[in-house]
Amino acid sequence: MQLSLGAILLQAGGAPAGPGGIGTPVFLMVGMFIVMYFFMIRPQAKRAKEQKAFAESMNVGEQIVTSAGIHGRINKANDDGTLQLEISRGTFMTIDRSAVSMEMTTAFRKKADTAAGISTATTVK
Image (cartoon, rainbow, N blue to C red; front, side, top):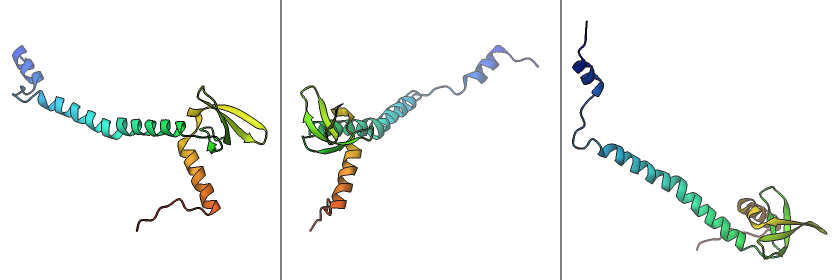
């Protein structure tokens, strides 16, 4: 049984593309980009902006936690973007502002406020 070249080409070609044949893949690509933007890119940019604002708002005397888990109090804010951190009485460490963990510091402060009996929740009347 021999197949002609025309029959092989017809079988391999599949269905011919109609007038809207190219629109579907483009629509799917645009849809995937929109989903990626709203679920991945936008939240990550928002989180980075919040972290930057948090790092710039730190003041002398605040208790912080670094991303490595080191607890300390800010002793001095240097002009080059570093902080002098007092980790125990008389023991100082210089760290970069970006090394302070926003999530861990917020959780530590919330835990300390709860232990001290200060309510951080607001009530709506």
